[in-house]
Image (cartoon, rainbow, N blue to C red; front, side, top):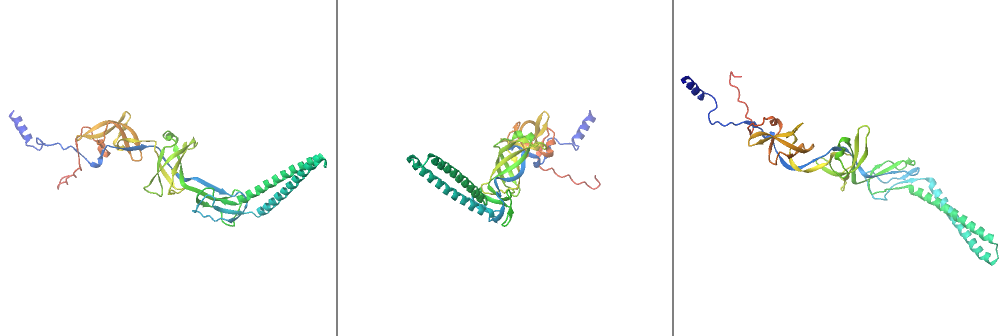
Amino acid sequence: MIVAALAMGGCRRGGGPQPGAADQGAVVDPADLAVAEVGQISAGPTISGSLQAATEAVLRAELAGTIAAAPAEEGQRVAQGTLLARIADPTLREQSRSAESAVRSAEIAVANARRDVDRYETLVPAGASPRRDLETSRTNLASAQAQLASARSQQADVQARIGDATVQAPISGIVSARSVSEGDVVQVGTELYRVVDPSSMRLEASVPSDQLFAIRVGAPVAFQVRGYPGTTFTGRVERINPTADPATRQVTIHVSLPNPGGTLVAGLFAEGRVTAEARQGVLVPSEAVVTEDDGAHVMALRGGVVQQVEVRVGITDEETHRVEIVSGLAAGDTVLVGPARETAPGTRVRVGTAAPAAPARNGEK
């Protein structure tokens, strides 16, 4: 008994923890902590493509000839009806004169035939002329009227061709392409100009078929355009192609983009995301959530002690790397992220920066 008592006394005087010493626990760096907060979260498939003008007019030559004038330049703003080009066709002038002469001759023939009808309608009842003369005059009048109609039709056709020689802007907009210059010889169908309306743009993008369920007509789209850093534009899904590409199994969608100030330029690359879901919720970084077959959990810090908390998650925002927590956490709860997430449940921790190890003394390893 005496030996045992001495041994116990020696232990108390040794280097063990003194009575009343506080257990400081593990140290967690503030960078390994995150606070659950209420915020807006959205999710949806990402899309990319190039911007195109929603309204574009491609003007082509409707008759062969030489470009006599092409005053409009690329980048020039034009109003509807502005002269863009004039095509010279030497045969049109002669055709116009010939058609005009044919109409005048036909009109004279009709006038003469009508006078004959009027005369015979007076003579026949008086017995001064046989009835067959009246019938012949009426036939001649009908024939002259038909020839006049034909001449006028031919004249209208020539006038239409003359009109085709004058190329005017069909819409108000900006000349985006000029393919001809004065003196060029063009054929029917040769492209002359392109005019775009910059007030609206469209984005054509492809979406994998397995994400098509998340897209609907009218869904908002937020996107960024190369050349406009830090600026987010918004649009809406206007149309969804009813067929998928047989090679890539992707579906093309068309997004309408208002461009009231003409800021956006056609041809630029754009990428963004269709907002399939959006709502307010309790949010934590996605790296704080551990997903397993039977559910998900986070490592929460409550009362200075690490606890494993089962949670139910909602939507995930891949762009901001945040997850909606439907149940299990409340706003203001602290969760562990990064390496600290591996801390065992029940561990008491304190927030701070771990002190560096003391340098070894001479002769110590």
